[in-house]
Structure formats: structure tokens, C-alpha cells
Length: 264
Figure 1 (cartoon, rainbow, N blue to C red):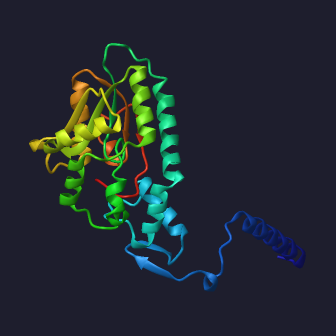
Figure 2 (figure 1 turned 90 degrees about the horizontal axis):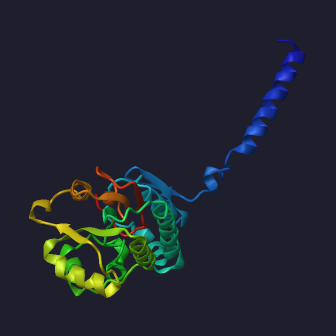
């Protein structure tokens, strides 16, 4: 290569590198970044508030897989989110999308157009319970949670109550499909009535044969039973992916936010 060709090639390389550098995210030099540490396969900035927002995104997107408790450094973040306007706003936006879809359904009037709701963190909020248990950072205690369920004092999620009411007005039959067990039927029904959820078609709870089944399998089987009975399951609402995944799924499924716990 002669000197003229070398000069042109160098200039082209310089211009290309400069152009590309403006298109890439600029990162601080390593010595200016907060210290890093490893937690399983995750590496993140210690004391970096953005981690908790990223953690919440990963669990809502189901990218994190099975997880057991809210990270200790994110307890205040979860507390602020669940008690703030953002949680309610996120829920309202999802409900708006659900209603937009519901209004496109040609409800036949034969009583077979169905919508399925989960209960906990979908229709009813257990936030008063989790506020006393470190917002999901404690290992789940089934006994104390069952005592809370028996109190039948969980309030309604406002966005979900709006969706529930409007779906009934549109002519949908409402089915409630929960991971709670049959011995909690009375307290669950009492709580639903207290919170304003009335006139549902059926409340489906785990029976003896359902104990121990993963939520995805259990709820899929119950949806299949409804389909076998001739119901058209147009919509499904839940706070866990296991409320919505599996087989015999609804035409459209809508996941509500929940950074408090994970159910596989």
C-alpha cells in the first residue's frame, strides 16, 4: 500500500470509529464505577438504586426464574412501590388494556363467554399482611398467612374491581381460580363479598387431589375443565405467570404486577 492509500484508509477508519462511538452507550471508566460483587449469576452495583428497578423488571418479565425472597437491599424499594402511585398506575394501565380487548369480544348471550381471575394480588391485596412481614424479604410462613386469610380482611385492588365490574356489565361469566385450598372457601368467599366481588359464577380452589401440584399444572387443568363444559375462555387475569401459562390458556392473558413473591 502506498502512502496515499494508507492515509485514506486511516482517515476512513478514524471517521468510522468516531461515528460508531457516538452510537454506543458511553460507560464510565472502571475506576469511576461503584464496586461490584457477585450474587449467584448476577453481578450488580452495590448500593446502586437502579438495581432494584432492574430486579423488578427481570422478575415481572419472568427472566429471573424461580426466586424465593425480595433482596434485602430492595425492601424499601418494594415498600415504596407497593404503597405508592406507581403500583396503582401500573395496574390501571393493564386493566385498561384488558377492557379494550374485552370490548372487542362478541359476547353471545348464551352464558358461555368466560373470564378467569386469580385472587391473591389480583382481586384481593395482601399488602397489610406483607407490610408486617418485611415486604416479601422473609421466608414465606404458611401458618401465619393462613391466619391472615381466615381473617377475611384483604382489601380489593381498585383497578381489578373496576375490571371485574365492567366485565360483568359486558356479559362475561366470571370464574375465580385460586391456589387457596377448599378449607379456606368460607373465609375466601366472605372476603370477596366484603371487598365488593359479588355474583361470580364459580370459585375454584385446590381440592385434595390438587395438593402438591405446581400452580401452572393445577390452573391449566381447571381451565381445561371449563372448556370441556363449553365455556369460551376469552380472558385471564393474574399476578403470577403460573396463573396464565400452561395449556387451555385464555385468548388473552393479562399479568398484574407483584414484586412480593413468586409461585411456580
